[in-house]
Image (cartoon, rainbow, N blue to C red; front, side):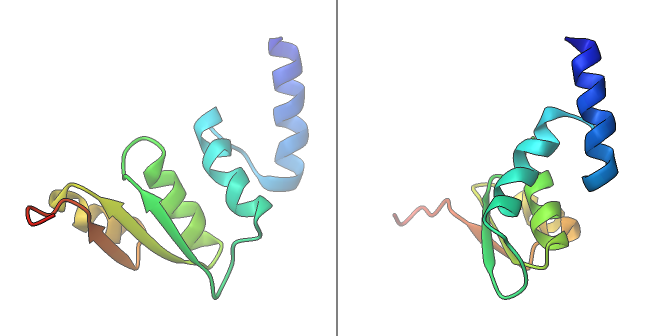
Length: 94
């Protein structure tokens, strides 16, 4: 199994660069499949384990990135990672 994984990584690096984990490919593959790019808007729900990579990839592909989070404290992090907008989804009036 490990030998096959190493072979996959070696071949994949030739075309797309290197990914450090399965989480990277999880957030990379959907925007590439749907041809995300300039003029499109991508929403990323949550800025945790996968969300931060989603923001980075969507921004790198040229999309406008909106992070949706329940934590107001993550707004600065989202902007620093490349989000254009941050929506705080926790509203006491809902």
